Image 1 (spheres, rainbow, N blue to C red):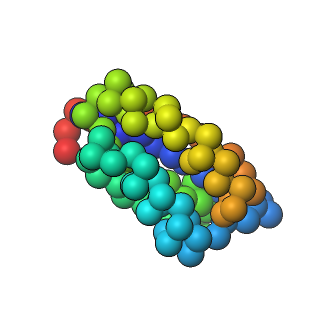
Image 2: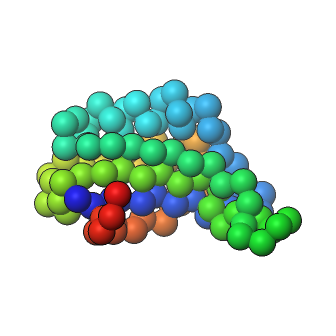
Length: 104
């Protein structure tokens, strides 16, 4: 199992439309990725590790797939559609990291 982490840096002055993200973008992502997508978690950063510090990421989305190959096969045909929608809700480009799940 892998997780594709989509991390939106908490950049000063950045815009992020959480309503659009949750009601339009994520449902579209789920629809186009289909059964290859095994799980989706969206988190909003509310603070850093120390009291009173800011979160490093304003929003994080974690997408689960059986393998890198399963992710690539599902994402590839829809990459442009998914990536072109970012401008509708965020003024910053996300950081993407693929992780191998060791414990869940």
